[in-house]
Length: 344
Image (cartoon, rainbow, N blue to C red; front, top):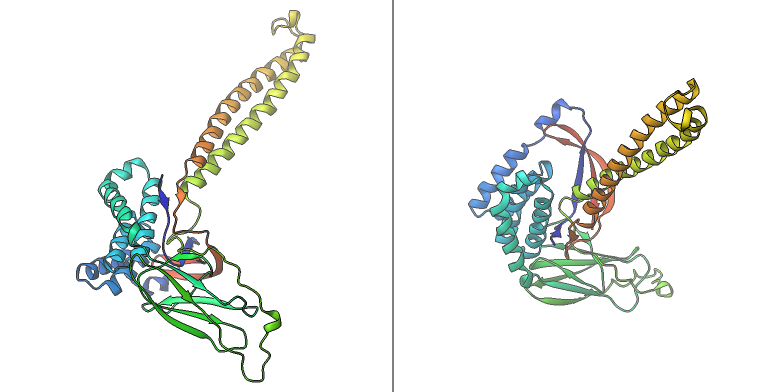
């Protein structure tokens, strides 16, 4: 069974269906970004290559781009991000039509092999706080290469890329407390945290101190959202339920007409009927056919929806459910888009 999904905070972009003429000048196209990223990748300029490929994929979700992003992350020694991105690619491969999988088979084979090889190289870090901390304490971290901070959990081992990192604790009314640490491939590291002392003359909040509960926070999917298989399961299953209900209702109507036919036709048959009997016989025939078709289609679709649901690939060991944080309008090369920010 496949693992699904991988690294950092992502945008779920949904087109609004209107054009903004000036938006075409807002930045390079997805293809231009991809070509620039691949050129930098070939030249060994990984600091610019990986972000360009990632942005191109977010604008145009082509499997080849996701595969090459994983290769770029691996070349940059971001083994955890690379493993998560290979997970993303393999999940996406499982969702594309079989006819499209033909062109991806070599990449799929390579991604499977590389993903397996990375397992032993993924480092983990456990952040540990004092027994109690003031209410409202926040813990965030960033790598030396990135300025953006992400929230982290304490008390659980989290996968992390090798290299230099900074972790910060923040308490309302106090100065931030920051610590620098390094992680190497395959390492399991514990990082002891603390908080800044209260400002002179301000209450220290010790009466309100309490433990920070461990919250499993892992690396998020690059391209979050409900999978195509899950959407298909819901759509097909809904059609199935509607078909079964239609079959049941029309079946009940058909059954109700049989009594009228019996009372108004000779020997209860459709021959030699009164006008009322003929009408009931015609109604029973029409609704009986609809009931049969409704049950057949409904049960088939219902079974198909169940199969799609239960065979959906399991989430990756590196992934967790995203949290929606913001919604705004962003320019795209084609016009404008509604962008929702999801964070882990």
